[in-house]
Amino acid sequence: MAMAIAMVPQPLLTLFLFFSLLSIANSSPSQHLQIANAERRIDLTSHIIKVYLTLKVENLGTSPASEVHIAFSPTEVEHLAIVKAAATSGKRKKKTYVPLDVKSAELPDGPNGTKFFSITLLTPLSKGETTTLEVLYILTHSLEPFPVEISQSESQLVYFRDSAILLSPYHVKQQTTFIKTPSTRVESFTVVDPTKRAGTELKYGPYENHPPYSYSPVLIHFENNNAFAVVEELEREIEISHWGSIQVTEQYSLVHAGARHKGVFSRVEYQTKPGGTGVSSFKHLLAKLPPRVHSVYYRDGIGNISSSHLRTDSWKSELEIEPRYPLFGGWKSTFVIGYGLPLQDFLFESPDGRRYLNFTFGCPLVETVVDKLIVKVVLPEGSKDPTVEIPFEVKQHLEIKYSYLDVVGRTVVVLEKRNAVPEHNAPFQVFTKPNVKK
Ligand SMILES: *[C@@H]1O[C@H](CO)[C@@H](O)[C@H](O)[C@H]1NC(C)=O
Ligand SMILES: *[C@@H]1O[C@H](CO)[C@@H](O)[C@H](O)[C@H]1NC(C)=O
Ligand SMILES: *[C@@H]1O[C@H](CO)[C@@H](O)[C@H](O)[C@H]1NC(C)=O
Image (cartoon, rainbow, N blue to C red; front, side, top):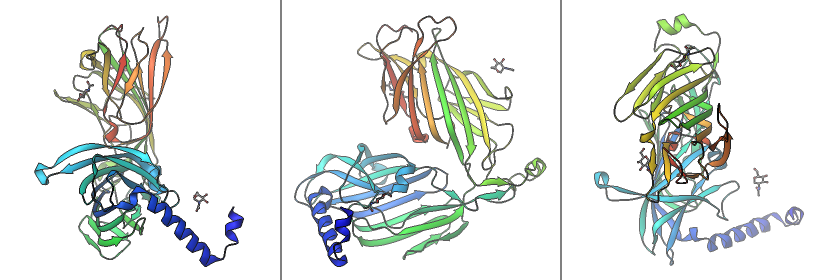
């Protein structure tokens, strides 16, 4: 096949490709839609990148459109943690949001490697109609430290790559991108006229009339000293005990994923010049736990660490922990946090008589990425056929756990998710058959 194409004279080949693309495009529903206006706000203040996209979509076709597609480059897809969309109406304070279904989709006419998600509209968009969508997507591991190694006294600089022009399967009439940096220190940035920089904001555009799949790479080099806290693996075990309590055990292996630390670590310098040295390192970690926690402990391989503070009120508990040493780029720390919770706060009965656990998924540590998250729910003895409800895709399987004095073992629901971000800290439920006793 490749041979046959290779023998076609070059101009003819181009024309042939052009026509075949055109015919595919004509048959795809995307041809009827146009983005009247796109506004993108990229927040680079953390190591977790949040992108807020507002799309004003117009139907120029003759038939109603029920779906709107958004496109991602192959690199983005690799680092994409979550995509959410909502339909908005009204202005400013009176704005209303209705969450919309987002699922991965295929379109025949995208450039090689482009991935699509389709947003299902509440009501199909009729000919000539316009609707406004708000999309939030989150990227992890997308800031590349440069230099890759820094000493204790240096600030951390990173690269961010994107396109000044929104990658879209539709014609985009007008668009602007705003990029927010953590500080005013921006070493360099690609200029795609018009490009403006003021304080901590970089503005690309407005640009007019870009055909589908336009792309214009930009590279931004800037300072980011925020805690690049990445949990390479977190295993949370939520054990429902027979005695009216829930015991949670969380095993963390944390790494500072920023620029690698170079040279020796001077504790003296670190302690005498606070704020002036080790600016990209971190010393404290904050875990948000449910209200009414008790028996909290924090330990590592050496033993219990006493430097933790627990603050609780009726809404939440905050546990501030301090590893034995501050974490610099490339340094790791493994530790365990454990706590007890009152069962009645999490175990309920559904209208159809089934008992269920309602607990929070995700990672209690604030502003962290979890490369691999495993959540295990150990059900009381005798519980069978559990079913899980969770608002996003996770891998699931069952295990049996035998502990001291257990004869039959207990069913364990195992949920696994890659690339988890704080937006995954959402409630999930595990339902069991009615015979389960509290
Ligand atoms: C598409 O990309 C893949 C992987 O990068 C490559 O192997 C393949 O040859 C590309 N196909 C075309 C038509 O460019
Ligand atoms: C560590 O703390 C836990 C919970 O407070 C306690 O049960 C355990 O005995 C402590 N271990 C050591 C070695 O101090
Ligand atoms: C689960 O708990 C959350 C609050 O943490 C609550 O908003 C939600 O309605 C509960 N879901 C169910 C099914 O009980």
